[in-house]
Image 1 (cartoon, rainbow, N blue to C red):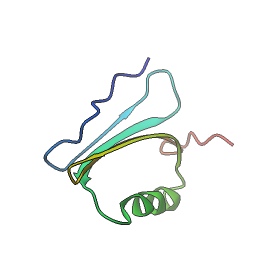
Image 2 (image 1 turned 120 degrees about the vertical axis):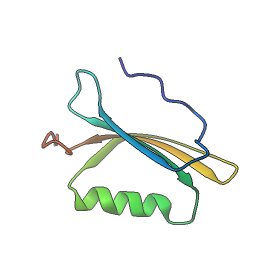
Image 3 (image 1 turned 30 degrees about the vertical axis):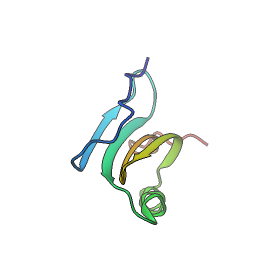
Length: 80
């Protein structure tokens, strides 16, 4: 079972990464200031790393964004 993800953005920029339990994917959590083009840049970075987001949870409050991405391919575990 996946740990619960806090639903509100942090006040400071941060990045956390970890493995999902018994799954061939990683979890990437980040909080930062919201801005135009942010998710396009995240998607471009994932494409460059040959990674694939299989789930995303995004919340924006008061100009801050929190994003939880569940990603395949970061450890060679890409599924077709």
